[in-house]
Length: 126
Length: 110
Image (cartoon, rainbow over all chains, first blue to last red; front, side, top):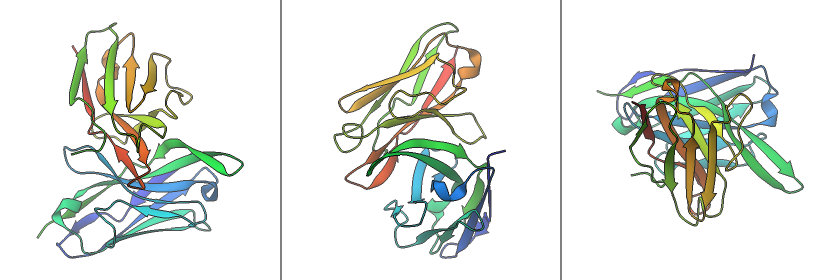
């Protein structure tokens, strides 16, 4: 079964750190770009970060740039998000999501975030 | 506020056809594909439409999408009670070098 399972969420004080993990199974992990998307309570979806299959390209939302670091371990089929200097506005459910790519020559197109984990809750509060 | 603009709510009666709009700009919808996600309360989003108008396997053909210029729309025909959910549009933004989402539309089936 194709599956993503997040872990590592919890309650942390402002200024603190947390490391989220996302364990992938049921598919060839190193073929896919992976993403983190978050959703604050009662709010919409906000993309956080992307990492390509070989970690060649990494992108961050401006709201987390300089504070969050995305990484992956293809041997362990896992995705990570190191979150430092956390703020109250980082409180959200964090989802990892698989992004399929369709490539023709040097051009690749996204097939969207086709597999999502169940999410892990991060609460930043004193 | 969100880079992509969606109406906060939409509604329809069973069997009806409803559309949800998504407005962007030349740096996102105007130059890149649009994606649509469906989310039920307390659950993870699900990919509904990819690359403007493609349905993943398992998504009923009652769901369709189109775009024109810097706007996109999702249409749901033969509305059913189980379609009641939140719907989000998304696109890559070339200027921000970010994925951007719409604020979401809560669909109510009356």
